[in-house]
Amino acid sequence: MRWLRLPRRRRLVNRQVAATTLLVASALVVTTGIVVEPVWVSPAALLFIILLGVFVLRLPGMILLAATVLGLMAAIALGDRAELEPGLLVVQVLGALSGVLFVRNRSRLGLQGAASDLMLVDLRDRLVAHGRIPPLPERWRVDSLVRSAYAEAFSGDFVVASRSQQGLLLEIVLVDVSGKGQEAGVRSLLLSGAFGGLLGAMPRESFLVAANNYLLAQNWSEGFATAVHLTVRLDTGQFWVSTAGHPPALHMHAGSGRIEMIDTTGGPALGVVNAPVFGVHTGQLEAGDTIMMYTDGLVEAPGADVDLGIDRLMGEAERVISTRTGGADAVVAGVRAGEGDDRALILVHRD
Image (cartoon, rainbow, N blue to C red; front, side, top):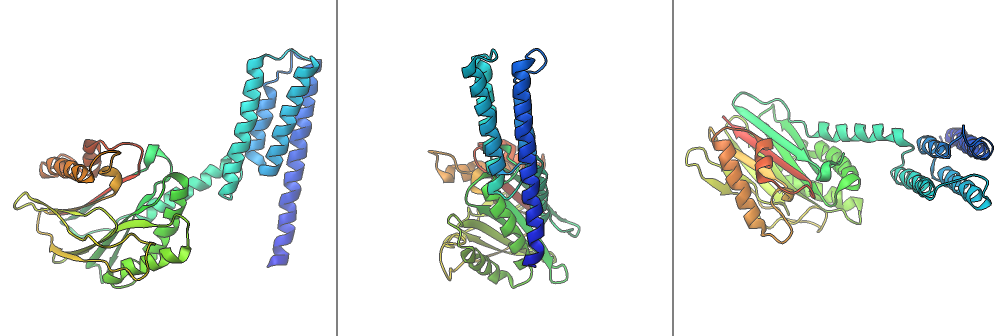
């Protein structure tokens, strides 16, 4: 297999060399045109060449192209061969540096060019697919919402769900991965696939232990995650909740109108310690009851008490759900959490 990969690598290197050579030659031609025919050839044409480099070049070629363009601009300006405005020179420098930084960021992710964003979109869609709730019987509803910080493509919060044991058990896990943005999103994608494989394939009481072992095995420098795991029997309404360093789930009782904070404190975050012990809360979902799970982005704010954030969330959920005026999106909108953190909310409702 290694011998088979060598010709392909040579072809890729040859294509990069050819593309770099062509773009550098194009920059030389454009520079000549700027000096000889300034009426017909604008210095802005060099920015177009930089843009082409962003699409087709890897980092070494992009650095060479940017250095060539900046060197040519400096030669024109210092040699008084054409009239260049200072503002134009600044734009050329910023354009070249921006192109190098863009390609560098893509190289860190193993991607090439602006078209690689299509791959990122595909990865995001896969993450969403892992959190799709399976079809449920009548009188059961699940409403989930995940929003990323500053509306970025990736979120450090994700959901995985499974229906097992002849369809009698519904398992849902809400996970909050450390970090934000693309780096957290890549970890979320990896963990969602792994957790989705574990969920429903083992006893419910073993899931968080297995998830913790998997995370420890990755040996990430910033690799911890918090999680809340809910299992519901769809025939009786009995449920079990366990948490790993995660904010407590909430049980909204339709009969009394009371909102109960489910006590599962004590379980450490995933990926922190070996052989952790996770507490389990057992309860009963009656008709009209709702279980609410969320991430800390909805209840935490700089300089504010988390308990106050949870109280605010409980009040908004009571207003929206008890009056049946909306779902997860209405609750999140009413809480008005800041855009600086990922946010997720799941409502499991029995009619």
